[in-house]
Image (cartoon, rainbow, N blue to C red; front, side, top):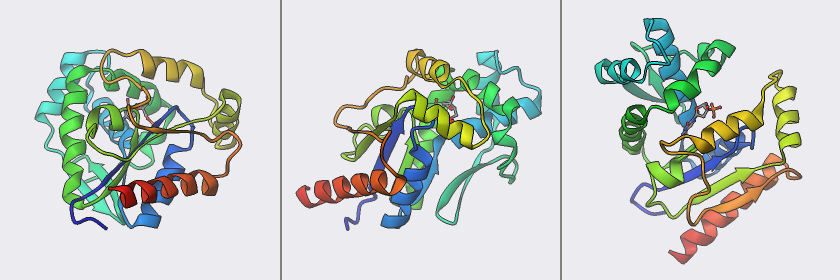
Length: 216
Ligand code: DC
């Protein structure tokens, strides 16, 4: 493959299979996997731990400025560390989930995240999943995908993970925020995977990547 690092951008609605498919695609290509939702979750957790009010955009932005962040690449996955610690379990609690959209809607936070997320190229070619990867973080990449599935199917998937969540409300909040909202990036292949398995979805993504690489 190319010598220049390649970025595969996978965006989409909540519970549309972004993480599962991004992992499968990264493994198949031998690329590094980046879960940007986990990065926002880590920031939210850090704010809560540091006693920073997540509803105060200035205070959250100030914490970002002060924070001596470190990115680590472990088992081909990027982690954002807090004083050398990766809060793997803590970022999945209801308390953190509730705080994330508040910090993720702060424009200064998104600027700060953009630098950090682009710096992941230091680890090599990437499969990066999130809400604004193709539209805002790596708009120049030729490999953009947008996943979606019917709301009933997505709610069923979340429920099977033991999580009851109002996905429609979350998607609406992600789509309507002023800073880097969730949208279908220009040039993205849209895949509705309501009736597809993860193997079929990731297979379609891989086939398209190979087609575009052959064309390039
Ligand atoms: O994908 P997730 O559920 O772990 O994302 C957590 C939150 O972060 C969710 O509210 C959307 C937000 N997010 C974002 O605004 N931009 C991203 N690139 C990734 C996640």
